[in-house]
Amino acid sequence: MTDALDQIRETVTKNDVVLFMKGTKTMPQCGFSSRVAGVLNYMGVEFADVNVLADADVRQGIKDFSDWPTIPQLYVKGEFVGGCDIVTEMTLSGELDQLFEAKGVAFDKQAADKIREANG
Image 1 (cartoon, rainbow, N blue to C red):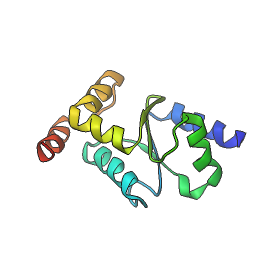
Image 2: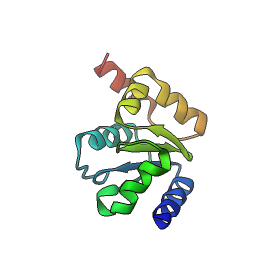
Image 3: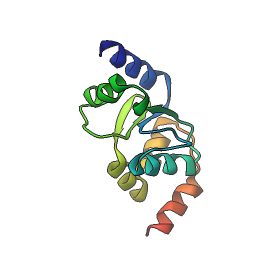
Image 4: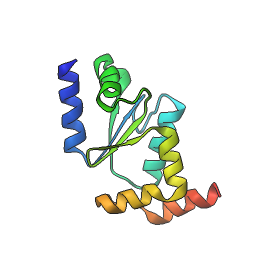
């Protein structure tokens, strides 16, 4: 498990935005992972995806690493942001935009506004 935690730590450190998810950003394998990946893809955010279904140690390790019981998990500049519900709320409130802006992560502001319009 130590190897998995080291791998997770390295992935979170080396990538500006990381989504630990079930499946991949092009082929999510659960609705919650699909929703978060969809938001990031739609907003044009470059992110690394880690398929937790491919490695049981990483799947458990990410839960231990974040002390968060569910997947997906989003990290921005090494900081744990949250899972599907939190990312959805942050997207709709504009907090995710603010986080990306504060951390210097490029995203399409018009796409973010369209998400809010469609869900307003």
